[in-house]
Image (cartoon, rainbow over all chains, first blue to last red):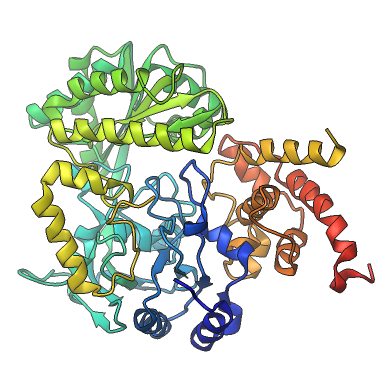
Amino acid sequence: MDVDLKKLLKNMAKIVGKENAFTDKPTSLAYAKDAMPWDVEAHNIPHAVVRPASSQEVSGVLRYANEKRIPVHTHGSGTSLVGLGRPKTNCIVLDMGRMKGLEVFPERGYFEVGPGFHIAKLRKALSPYHALLPAFPGSELVATIGGVVSVNTSAHAVDATLCKPGDYVLGMEVVMPTGEILQTGTESTRKPAGIEATKFLVGSEGLFCIITKIRMRLIPLPCFENIVAYYHRTEDILDTVMAMYKQGIATPMFFEYLDEKSSKVGFEAVGLKAPPGAVAMMSIDSSTQVGCEEKAKRFLEFLKIGNPIEAKIVKDKEEWAQIWSSRAEAGNYIYRLGSTFGSEITVRVDKLKEAFHEAQDIILNLESYQGNEFYSFGHIGAPTIHAYAFVPTKDIPNDVKIAIATEVREKTEALNVKYGGCGGEWGLTAQRASFLKKKYGDAYYEFLVHLKKTMDPNNILNRGNLEGWL
Amino acid sequence: MSESENVKQTLLGEVARCRGCRFCVDVCPTYQASEGVESMSAYGRVQIIKYLLTGILEFDDSLTYSLYSCLQCRRCEVICKSKGQDLDICKIFQMGRSLLSQNLVQGSRHEKI
């Protein structure tokens, strides 16, 4: 599609102001690349980048794009690990970074926030209200609340304890691809029952609408007690998680693990002595400190089922901060030494151990690359296993990068199909269209396509994600 | 291999170490001053240098503006190191600028330099 860039720039500048509309190639390229390991190609480069400041400006951009049939790609912070952040076709990139207003209404029990507000800053802004923000992405320094709600991911948190961020969204302001501005939900803390738009627009991955304001419940901040447990083998941790659900034990809010190799990298990264094997970290929550301590004691007793080398409650805040950050830093530091290709395996709990062994086998026997290593870590209480192929070099041709990433993704997603899972934090479109068909069948996929056509008749929003384009 | 080719290869190797995590975006003072334009962040500049080296980008004024607006404050390097990558980001920019310098003296806007 030929687009007159000068004309586009002029028209976009009329809507968002000339200082917030760009068609120069350096700016377009900065928004084209994401965390996907392979390079951008010509079809990924946006025609323009625009930075609206209001719903009215978003509406203006969408009306124009819809009329001219120019695709629009939403940009939060571009930290998606499955390529949601990369445009799949030449488009207008809608950078939501300027829409970061925040109003907290403790007397109403909620806050309203613009989609561009960064998670870490939002957590800090809510702390005077003793409120818990129910989203914990590893990228929270840069990830936005708009991205979190669009994907409906709580990331590190255990769903069985905290649910998803969407469960706390009371209402939203959204702009439809045709330009209409809709208000959804309620200003009461009582969420609507029955058919109501909020619940099917949350988690719609930017395919149905652009979120311009999010109204979210203020959740009272609980007390926490933290536990670290050291094991000989990762399998002991998997046994523990399987027993936790089978026995109906109250799940911690956080239950992370590092396998035998990842724990060494993670602990050394934060200046701790390498542990003897795999490590599990848990945060137990309760509304009172007394309740918390009692729950933690009981959980510590339960942990004996997995025969840990040592399991203890960590009272010292600095010690816990180091142990906890070892989990986050493991992924970063493994990458330092080469290239990594990840997956998210979220199978039925009773199949966790089988899935882990099969994932290990898949990663260590790749057809697209020989000589790679296997690392794993993740939110095992959720349950999520991030199984990673580590290639000990950064010097890999682009086509090989794509081949490894595709093989890892498709084969680990087959485990999700085989054992009843479907992923739980990275979203389900972008590179996952083929997975959706395998998991749910063609009729289900067509149902999604029909939904998309209903909301977005000219398919301008995030075009290519549902189609499975790279 | 010529000196300039050596510089290019060194730079490509350095830039390939970038994970694309974008943690360096928000800490960049010029990104903040531009109210959040990513080509004015450390991450954006790394991408710009990469595409300059691979020939996808050619010299133009907006590119020069992005690269020369870096204050060399090294806040990006602090966060990069804390996240395990430890790229020498400011050195990458200096080398990128030196590659551009031949174009700069020829460019009409910079003839007086």
